[in-house]
Image (tube, rainbow, N blue to C red):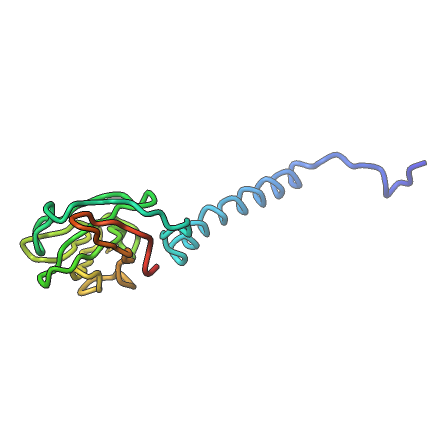
Length: 153
Ligand code: FES
């Protein structure tokens, strides 16, 4: 036998609105926090390193002709420095994730979103990017240049 306290009461309009607003507020908070969390924990994936041939040395010239490619679904660039060594970098800006472009006339990477500028080795030279561009581990075998994983995140 149910007591008076145990009897279910019909949901009032006020209770329904409080419940609905609470649920939509919680969903809105998740929608706001997800991009902030993604910004705080950047985009380099913790996937197992995969060895991939990305270019031939003949495709590159020092600080001029570069090779763009995707590694683990991340846009990257391979370039040759003036001393002849090769560098592989993520082209995802460490500020808000825009895709940066190599500018051979200025020998720099440029982010069109907020004018971030990075050196050929990925160091931040100007603008808001908070950290250098993640770099790739490279291996040279004859004329083939291979990517073997990330060397920084
Ligand atoms: Fe690159 Fe803001 S996203 S500088």
